[in-house]
Each structure stands twice: as C-alpha cells, then as structure tokens.
Length: 170
Image (cartoon, rainbow, N blue to C red; front, side, top):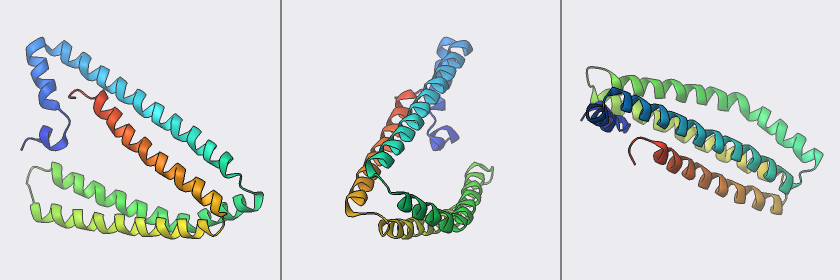
C-alpha cells in the first residue's frame, strides 16, 4: 500500500493530474484545495464560537453557577492537561511508526493500543466532569447543554464532510 493511499490524501490523483496537465495545473489545484480547506475550517470555528455563545445565553446561568463551573474547570484542568499531553506524545509515536522506512506491525499495534487506552481515560474523565457539571445545572439547563452537544457533533460531522468536499478527490 502506498503512502498516498495510507494517508488518504489523494496524492495519486494529484500526481496523475500533474502528469496529464503539467506541473502548473497540479500546483494550482493543490493551492485551491488548501484555500478551500482553510475556509471550511474558518467557518467551522466561527460557527462553534457563536454556537457556544448561544448555548451560554440560552442556559441563562446564574453568577453562582458560572463561578462553580469555572472552579470545576480549574479542578479538572491539570488532570486533563497531563493526559492530553500523554495522548499527543503517543499520537506522534504512532505517526512516526507509520511513516518510518522499516515497518514494525507489532510496535504500531502496541502504540495504537496504548493510545486507545489514553483516549478511554480522557472519555472517562470527560464523563466525570459532565456528571459534576450536571449537579450545578438545573434540569432545563442540562437539556439545553445536551441539545447543543448533539448539534456540536453534527457540526463536526459537517466539518469532515466539508473537508472531503474541499479536497482534491471527491
């Protein structure tokens, strides 16, 4: 399997286009794809910020609730930060193993498994945080939060769809 296929980047189609239309066409298409990708990501970030603001307004948190949630975030931050750093390092190890010249399937599986365990730990921590946050919120506020979380997941799904549409291979 080629690196292009492995990475799902559609590089082979870019190479084919370059050979058929010349190097300039390939470079133009690649630049266009990058610009489209930037626009999709920019729109996603702006939508997320406005969505977060709308959620906070709709939840109508009291000052006490805002303070309690802020303190809860401060309580969880060190643990989240440490585990996120561990996940980042493990992900880089995995990328290095996948891209290295000498393939080591056993090492790839081992690091993948370790990364999966770390992601599981992050999910459990997030679940603990949400459970604690729910004790601060009213039932209506929890419903609003869950509604916005569902919308956020749909936004992420749309981002990936948009990125696929912005790419060189559709």
